[in-house]
Amino acid sequence: GNSVTQMEGPVTLSEEAFLTINCTYTATGYPSLFWYVQYPGEGLQLLLKATKADDKGSNKGFEATYRKETTSFHLEKGSVQVSDSAVYFCALSSNTGNQFYFGTGTSLTVIP
Amino acid sequence: SAVISQKPSRDICQRGTSLTIQCQVDSQVTMMFWYRQQPGQSLTLIATANQGSEATYESGFVIDKFPISRPNLTFSTLTVSNMSPEDSSIYLCSVGGGTGWGSTEAFFGQGTRLTVV
Image 1 (cartoon, chains in turn cyan, brown):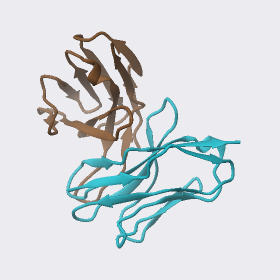
Image 2 (cartoon, each protein chain N blue to C red):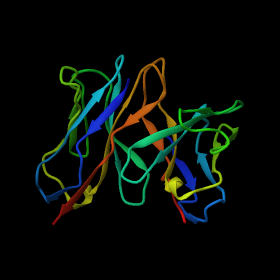
Image 3 (cartoon, chains in turn brown, cyan):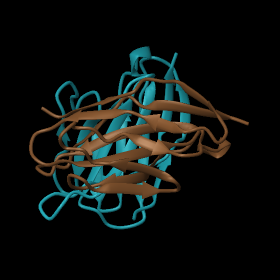
């Protein structure tokens, strides 16, 4: 079956620190992979995505590479800002259906 | 992309009552999805709402508890019936996530934070 395992939080970093949030997946077929971000009081927003192996998704300084050999899609950012404080969700979508599978979410707090 | 308006954004309800959550999309979509996000948990798909047909429910969710309406291509409602404290969650409406020609991203409403007391 399909599932996503995500690094548990909460994570607290100082501004300008390096961020990694680990995400691994189990899937049948060839899934697409996503990172969503949820700012306080808001809905989920797409942060980045990758639709095939070795693709790198990037947005707002965040990056994640679709690694089929390790079934991973780790989120990274070289220098976090206070405004990056949010909950981050790793997700996959199987190309055989509409259903999305989400990780449990990782809460990130960046302190000045 | 799609802009989704969901309301109410939050509510506190008495057990045994029902709450209807509304979801409005700024474009016509065939499928709309309802998710539940329990405290500290991942998002779980409740059902898929197709315009003109009955909603398709995931394992563990039933129509009597979560009736869904889909009167047109831009609107859907989810009702949480006969609520208990275990229903306290965030409920999210979503569109997108295609098949066939390739998966696309999903778009979400801001969610409804429900507390049952």
